[in-house]
Image 1 (tube, rainbow, N blue to C red):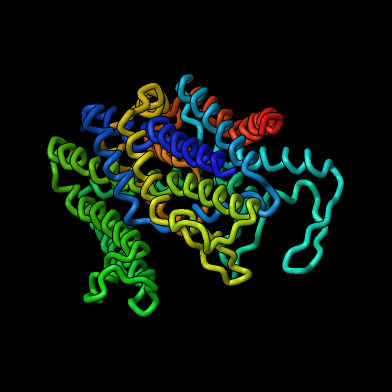
Image 2: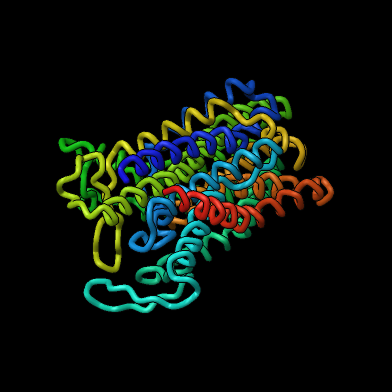
Length: 450
């Protein structure tokens, strides 16, 4: 069983690497299309910020993914089948140049293999399990966490919420990029109202971000014992909100001076700002997508501990994994090597590029200029930061695609190549069910040998 755990960890990191080059286009397509960076420079830039996300984001999305299926009711074969199916589907879509969601591939595979396991073990009949000395009747489909209400009125979780964001993530990205584009277009005019709006937005952003800061009293493990200031500044939760403020204030500063710049100077500034927006999106990509693989590895270790019957206290430090349980007040524990390995794998994958998908994202959806690149990447980054805050594992692919469509709509509806867009939508809709079916097939095959 221990050997199988190691195989799963290795394959999960391989999937993370594939995710990197499959989704590299998300962060670099617009800077390559506008020739702000060469393809090689762009992937180095994106990979650097993919890895930098290690110090910015927490583990909220990882915990959500880890609890996609009931870890007490599955075995390592389920997780292995899910990862193998996700790798296969990712390679197929990469080969075809289709920017599908690596996130939904992984979650669909995990859920599909879990359902196959439940059917193989219990059939379609009910079964009884004992949790904390209490009997519970379960249906075969209960093995997957479909929907769970949020704690204290917070954001609900589960596969249904993830499926809902197949639609919501690109819509949010499109709406945000459309609004940013309209804002900047109005800011280019020599009128006072856009500047008044910009100043109000700057003040509102500062107040909002200030209210989101975690004070030193609530930081459980300060990074700088001797300095309260630096401990607050470098708290991962606070860093994320500082970045949100920095992005909004940078765009706002440009909006204030936009009307005084000629076309050549404005384009030069926008090209430099694309570096900022691309970096922001790469941070969001690394933080969101790496956590999904962390969740799978954490779930695998938790299942190994559960099924092998070993005492967690006798395990080496690198296997000391505890899945969080808000209802029981259990705080999640994840050894440092897991996030470090995942961020490294996705960064190396991004360095490998994914040029077929870059072409689709950078030119086939709509023609992208520096202005549109800044608006799309900024909208995509902000969408990722806010969804990560609510622990929702959204697709970076869907988010940036929606953002690119949004900037295209500011020109005219026909500026968006809807034929290409509809093909992408079909790929998005099919990803979870196809990955689930593929994982179920992989599970039944693997189950004959393991």
